[in-house]
Image (cartoon, rainbow, N blue to C red; front, side, top):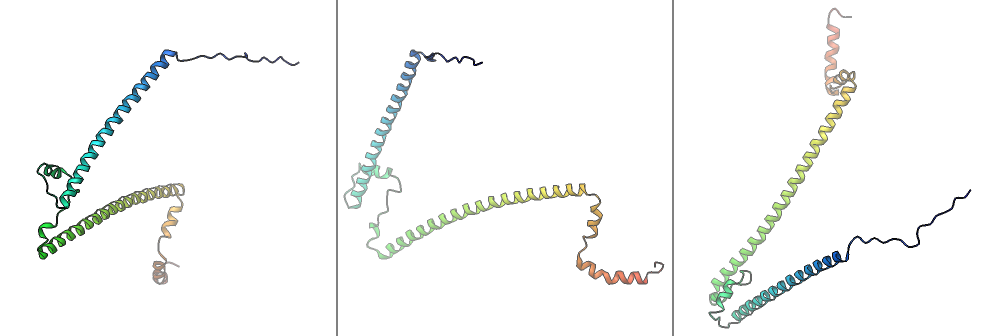
Length: 195
């Protein structure tokens, strides 16, 4: 009645898909990639250190120029090569003339106001552009919805052909029917031949 149960072999057979040579080749390739990445990072680090040293040199030269230190001729090309954002205009030339100083301050203030207005204008343009895209999307959605409604109305009209004349009779507004009622009654009274 009971059939005997057979169990699997006590030790499973392991089949390795890769040989030792393939593993060694894969490891060597990964080591080579890691070494290349490490060399690239070292090169970037040295470039960043050189750039930092140049920036510190420029900052020291700018600080020396602000404190009234004499600018050496060898330093002038480095300051000229500095970005415009790092070089600030000096106020020393018009320090003795208050009218000229006031005019320069007005010019700087006007420039700040202009930059603020330009940023507001950019933000307004972006907002208007966003509103226009949203409006276009809504128009497309409304057009699609109207098309679906007209298709459904056509399907309903096709399914109910007898409802079309009844619908045309009821298209007359209530105000029109009320204003025509006295004239229709008069016609029926004064029309000869019909009883």
